[in-house]
Image 1: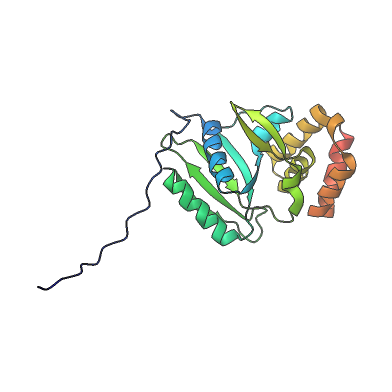
Image 2 (image 1 turned 90 degrees about the vertical axis):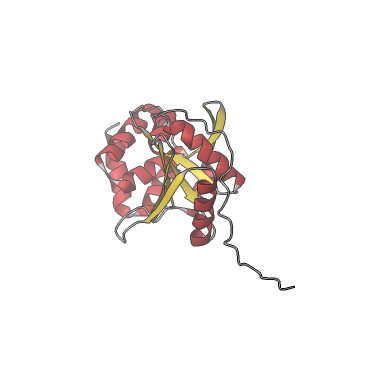
Length: 207
């Protein structure tokens, strides 16, 4: 009797049967909570930034997207593992690297079936390494998320330098000025560049 061994193609990664919170468009905040679950399960440090952080610090603005900053001890391997986990959960996730003059090192774009979107920033150039030690745990839509610290939020917005970033800084300085550790804020701004510290000092004079 002759036995023939037929090589088999390895099975594709199974999609996790996990109930997604979003059930329609315009629910990127719910998609963010699903992503945060995966980040926590993968032991990846993160900090919610962007419009949601601005809202947390008292300045509301309309935005359909949700953003977070993440940190990997080994960026290439860590980001690939996260991409795999996101795909297994049923999300479309793609990674893009920033240009040499881009303040953002790279970004993972995540979408669900309703075109809700979350952007995970893979780092900001000159970003202080201890930024995640200053995040604030906050209740959000029945769950818990880590919000970037107030001073870090302002410093990174000044470094980003866009019109909306500057407007966010002005609004936060006006609403939350009494809560700011000015010494820490100036240190963080200087950590990016001297020009950021000068921008900060100019903006603070207008408050």
